[in-house]
Image (cartoon, rainbow, N blue to C red; front, side, top):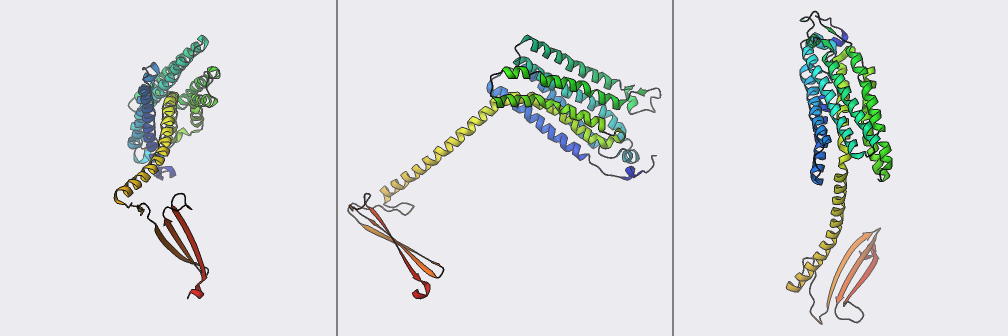
Length: 371
């Protein structure tokens, strides 16, 4: 049994972070692809090859997140490796098995969204040289994905030696750390090429500057792979179950970022429709307010015509009649009393064009004098 080192006695668990991030990415991935599909249906677009690639990318990205949750629930990810060896040694077998599946799913999770982006390029590019370059990158992405899958499959011979070394005494493994560190390098090269590739075409498109900037930012989102490579080189692999949390979060971030980047360019019709609807709502609310005011005045007039009175206290005056309404308000300020007297005389007087005359009088006196 392993000795009780300080890390073995440390029961700190931060694996819940991996689970929460995985759930968040499931929601985001489904939402982004759902909006993409909705936009396609709304505009009546025909299904293209990049749509199939996005759907496959969604399947493997959701699978990647599910495997991350299983790593936390079943393999004690988030604890120190020394603690796991001391208290839950059997969970390391589960950890190794799920990790192999996690590696395969990750490769497919970023390969299909990359292919979707390149297929989208083919719909934009017109010049033959650009299209040929795009096909070259498609070949590089496929070759990179296949090579990493093969490397993962033969990282141990037999593969079961990874989690059962005693049962396969003649087995051996390659340096897994070097495999994952340097396998990221081809992805970075492809990402840089995919980032630079569309800009010559973007400069020729007759689009507003803000739209060109938006497309450029979309194409640049795949550069998250560079951050993942930096973390891989700086991560201490000796405490694998502890550091797997940050590594797993960044892995899901990379794959999901490619998927989101493949969806962004198709949101333009959706944003335009939303902006148009918001503008119509604001315009109708302003018009509706003025209509409501006019409608309220008409209702008051109709009530006066029928009953002679309205809910607001207005009263119909007969022809030739004259009526005086007197109201008063009293308030005190700094020992002075203000009596405000308002009188409204209604009638057909020549001095008033509308037949209504309003007169206000203010009586000011000291409070002590009044008393």
